[in-house]
Image (cartoon, rainbow, N blue to C red):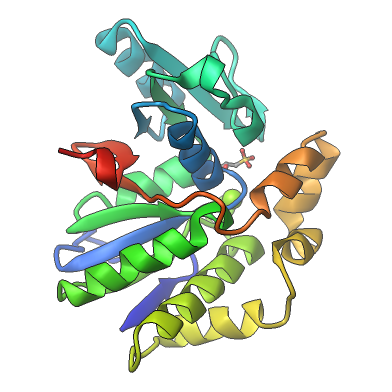
Length: 244
Ligand code: 3SL
Ligand code: MG
């Protein structure tokens, strides 16, 4: 079955996700940034919820670290990069470990660490994420798509991607059933032609535009252009094929 948590509050209280494969979705912008950083050659991305924790971890890890993240959409003081995926060029992140702290996306990632498998999805890697999900289902795992939401509230764009992923998974695997959350996500997604249209109605999309990040929306709307899935291993996200 494909299940969708429309907000992280739907996750089990005790965080027990042992028999599940979880795809975390924060289209605007954490999971778009994560997949972009790895595609640009970062060796891993370490998601942390708290900026102070990010500073401590970066100190402990030593050289080759990029401290990154946002609060209120804006770069954190003293950090090397913000949370705009367009900042993550190979000049800045190639061969580096990115320690990333964001308001919603990295917090959701920390809440699902007990799952058997954890990956991240964005429109950018939608087709690869659907393949990853089908493989997990074939391994006998239950599948949960977790929408990171915006400050604990429902997020339009994350739910639309959950809908697209559900459609792509069903195209690849016959007979997969859906929870009510997954059905709702599909209905929502089917009302749009593409991610650009989704972002035009999204409250957080509008906010990012006001903050001057309109180009991020155009970039994050690109669909299935990165053919890889960041996967969590030992608290670090790496592309699955780079994990030995
Ligand atoms: O909340 C998050 O994880 C961020 O992606 C939010 S923002 O788009 O950088 O404002
Ligand atoms: Mg978001």
